[in-house]
Image (tube, one colour):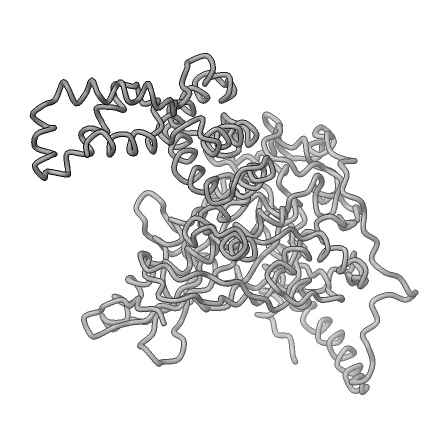
Length: 95
Length: 489
């Protein structure tokens, strides 16, 4: 797989990252290099190997169903560029 | 087979329907944080730094949400996957602070299952039908946007952000709006019996995405559209009806159906295209690196199974086969878990099943209807109702007196026995008193007596009516019948 400029722009747009033409120019070969390394890994036969999800044997911990958090509205809104009446206020988004 | 077809100008069309139901899991706290999951709090007060997606915050799953999803899966006879995993579904929207929703695409918690809908001639469902459920996965809800509070801003409330949802995905096994309606009602009943979702569609704790396509009988599947977030059974049925007819019109006038997302307008009963940006569906799912795979022990699954209550289908069958209740009554009494609970409390108070079923279906439902009340806020308790029914069984009250006493119970909240004593509503079987009244009535109506004796036997009812009226409805109807027959012969 080869990443061209159109693909770089699409990925950037999906991730909401602004990129100049020069940055796109530089990014395409970088991504291609990374993908090249990844493809090399594909040469190893892993058909009989379970995917490793953690380096040490570990299982997902679940918590009890109890209300232990919340009621921190000021902290939640503190970094909002704009907040009104306890809400985040954002540019109008109507479909 | 369904007889439902859309009649186009060029022939008949079949409709193929699948539903994706989002059901909010009943839990105190959110799926991945300890903030409260309840409805109706002040904006942004039930939000933790996890829900607000502050950097460095880590999700820890709520065991109860997992348990409820597994119990739901078991209730629809589904495979429970002992190994499942959470994935990130990436998109940007103002109600999603993380920039991704934690969901389960590749390895859902619950696999293949099914539920059964019953034949309903009136609705056009010819026979019982099994509807497949492809999967149930667990995911986060998004926040809420309000657009009407400010001229140029939308307001964001994250209280709902991170609340646990089950997405229940059916197979495209439904062939008419009626079948889809029956599936939704049955699914809602099961969720409420299990207690994993309150099923409240108005408050949005249950909503459906409706997939519809049309085809010529026998043809392969056509292209489908998805109508999002429809929030009542009636609206789901309307959306299907409209969307199927629209698709037939498009195809018959030479057009093609585009696979797209549509919106339902409840005011007009129609759907319209959302015209989303083309990359809206490029979600770039990948396993969430913050969460290890979810592994269930056999003991956990066994506990979930043991905790399931008797489910609607089993209850309905038991009512018919063991309690001798009619199929229709059994279906109505088991359709809502609250009704079944109330009815069983009435039986536990000693009421006889068939009598109790008839009384609940006619008298109680009639009264609730008139009062605009529901069984949850029923003005009489099962114990009070059982006392009333016992007074009928032991002959103290006739059917019509029982109606009067019940009315007074609803008005005053007093016990049936108290009302009977106070109002003197007791039925009398005193043959002397009844005979005296009958004699008086025969004397007052010589014309009718003459006609009856000359063969007009239909007048028997007239004499019964007169006697009951004279005794203010308190005479035992059986005794009146017997004594009248004697007096008239």
